[in-house]
Image (cartoon, rainbow, N blue to C red):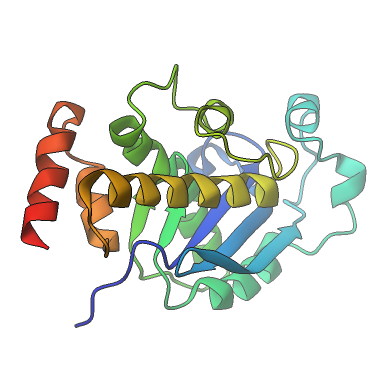
Length: 209
């Protein structure tokens, strides 16, 4: 089976009514970009109506209001469409455990499944940008000198900036370790390596090239 390249993925982000579908929270926006060989070639963005009013806190945090959501399609309709966008691709998200929970939950409600692999750009950034003050997306965008693509906490802008962060980390590995081809499963493994052993792990990849 052919291995997937790290620079050919779908990078996604959800805006939601809260922290977990286990507490009744739902998605209110999905944003995603398709990256092929390090270049963004397609985008997906939809608001979705969760079926209840969202809190003032979420309105203020995301800039998404109840007025904006009232005439939007339901989550199931949007996620059925989104399942076609991500089909056949691995996915990346910043703090991926959060986004994966909502992805799996909303796809299940839409009677769809996602069977690809997922990698967390936040965990990878803790290995690659160890000198960053913290590993929030906004901080990393500034630390890595990435151009801001829009307003933080809106799904498409966050997905696009996460994609640029992801590609900046791949480029940094290529430059520092001379690894021309980086596979998705290698970055997934890196995300689980103790950050103290990052250099050892990447050196071993370079020696195996």
